[in-house]
Image (cartoon, rainbow, N blue to C red; front, side, top):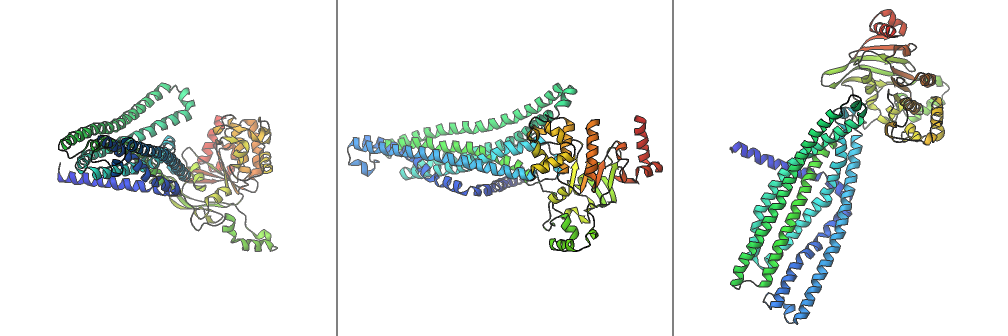
Length: 626
């Protein structure tokens, strides 16, 4: 090995240790949240370690007392044999009883601590994930996130409960045993201590290899979960296109890779246990050999030799436990790395520290100024709400691959504007930018003269209501799927349903507004899901309404009801409508025609037909199809 390679290896190992320490420190704040439990668990280590270490010493004293050896304690020598044995039996019973009680109590405490840490990390991780920009979810498989939120987080609780506290307990126990051994016979103590050095090196080596294998195993598990999630969500496509066998083969390959990596972790874990078993037997043999030689030289008694044989066994028991817990720690470090990757993901879209109270405040000034203005007789002088401006906006999902190019337009308050264009023209991207699901690469987006980055996201999304082509429903009742957690009265819910002509459909459900919907609303039709999306928008009384092919999944009869409700819903509101069927947007105020992210035409339906451009071409093609 060259000097460069040696230095590189040394640096890598140093950096790994540094990273491990830094990773562990990330868990410390969660431990502090349960500081009392942690402190009590640590305090109990002292009496538990002492209670663990005393039995071999007491058994050695029993042998010394029976053989009347010089190593017998002074307070036992002048007593009858039966009385001395009785005292030792009582002491042994007390130590065992105390140990069992304390170990059981501490086990409960550390498991409770682990669960509290797990719950806190999972809560923080979930809150962070739901705050990330949509861009993050575009590149991250759902199955991978589920693995991080469930199995990876579960492992982190064990780092505290089984791992860290257990390792400290084992180390303290070993120190107590070593101290007692040196106090009664230093030569045999040195022999056992010397044997610990190569064992420690072997354990560290195997644990490093285990860490690498475990990380790969967790990655393969993420891939496995991603495939499961993908196939379940897309089960219709899987069965319609007969992909069962093909997908099963893909899953089998991923499953085999996962098993292979898990087998490697099992191998290294088993190697540690086997090594410790052999070293433990060798240690006992060494103690017997050296102890026999000292015994023949009358430098050792049978009682002390018996105690050392028991200590030799017990010295390697915590080391074995230490190795197993260290395996948990290594698995925990792997989980911390994977969870930290998510927690370190920057929240791209944040509310600024100086965000204003609301759009109304931003346009008219502070509350007291508004009240003063309302008290004036000229109430009609107040400007209307609902103006949207794109100020030279550029946007790219990937670097320099712009899907929106220099968009510059103004939508006036109360105006109805339609976005049309071929697939990939950037229509949906405009809506995502307006709702601030993504940030513009260049330029600004203003609502009522205020940059949307200056507004709280919650306020902006109350100001806007978006109805997508496919309404998403959560598991829960109909009411909660309309309110989405906001505090609306039942009368307001009914009023919104009646405004959008969906009240009749809801009342026909088995329990009406209290009908339980399954996840994604699989127990109602697509059209009914869309009707609830309209009620969801109506109850919020937005200033701007965005319709993204909102009536595409409705049948003719239902669409007629919704179009009637839309007439009321769109009154006195700014509206942006994305539509592929050009016949549905003839009556809007203006139509924006997009192509490859650029605004190439705008005007009313008649004006665009007269221009004979892209819109006229699209219109004529659709007329030919009908």
